[in-house]
Image (cartoon, rainbow, N blue to C red; front, side, top):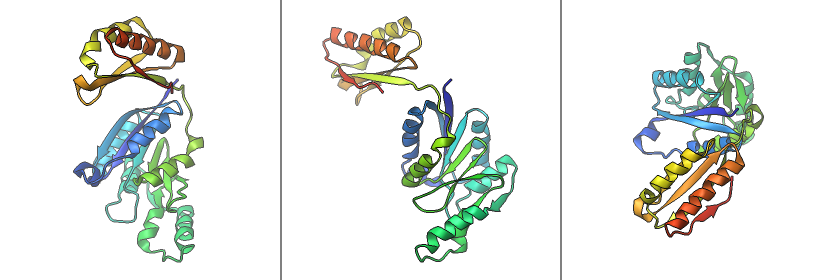
Length: 250
């Protein structure tokens, strides 16, 4: 069976447009390679009630939930508190996390201030996620992975939890792109191909508007069926006078 996941991106800066979220895109690819489908993404502000409400909805629906953002040293970094409240547990200063923070800053001759030690706070009962980039760890509790919002740190934390993710059945995908072939001209053919083949989904993605061309992606747990579907799409493109560009199977 394929595993499922959701991401809960946290931060006023995401919703104001000040910061572009890169973590969802990276996580989707990382999970796909491991047979885990990123099925839902939510963005909430730095509001404890909204974080808790979203988290409780997602953690019961999916195998894994990843949060990003709100675990830094400042007053508006409330993710740990919100998650602890949602789970009904206390927030503690984790001794192992505190040692990691002290080692990171102390090793660089930087004072370990109360604000920096704030990053050693975790929900009671949580496990730590190593952070080789900036020292302060992330947190795993139940099926929730609490990660940093900074993309470079988020990605490093993903590498640290590799062994904690149970791989599912990988979805294979392949694609065909036709330049200057309007997406609308393929609509009937795509419908017929989709109806004729079981166990495959076809996604249609226009290039900068209908008239500029289209990319069709076939996805299936069965590599042969994905190939069969995309070959049928390519044949339909050729019948309409376009020469498809085929992308390597993934």
